[in-house]
Length: 258
Image 1: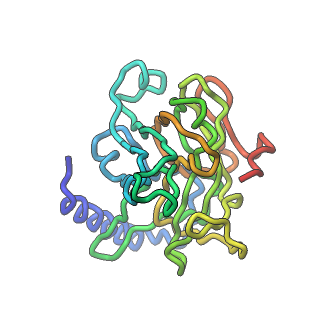
Image 2: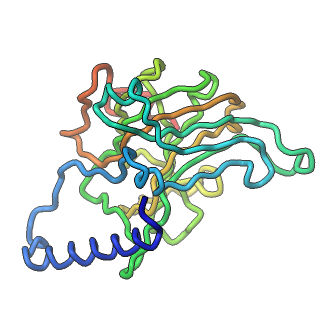
């Protein structure tokens, strides 16, 4: 497993190599690539290590959160991977006695860590891609199935802004599915509340994550979400190669709901 320092220098070398390669190839004159691109994959310990987790326990709640590597063959063989990540824990709405009436419990989340290099922070440019694509597997108590949200943070001027969208699932049998969410349908939130002023989202992503918000819906119990990858794609690639239905906002009107 790579250390934090070795990851830092690996990112620096990549940025330097990419910059030199673009100059040599004069790629700035090329048509922007619309090819699918993987932002994060979770098939190795290093991929899992790139994520940070948090829950209401950090401020006095009782929910738990874990994000670890699942090497169970029965889980991973259907998609031909040696391992995938598992986001799991126990969603609880109660809080520690001394915090009762002061805080609200019922959330857990993960997101990628900030990726710094010698040239600054690495951001993901999504200007030429229309959809966020997630390959996921829904498990846990049915009471938690409607409490998942996708969260995006950009390089916008307000650091507490999150662009959010409800994560709807077609499958409830603990099998893998592909979900496609148009970037245009994410809404701006701030400190957990929908912002009255909706701005256009920046095309530079700082972080991508998923949260379980049991406090919003009164959902408690064991939650579990398997996750293989997070990608960006366009309309022509927003289709699944898995058996079973693909989930996309262009195919289901309920995606218009937050």
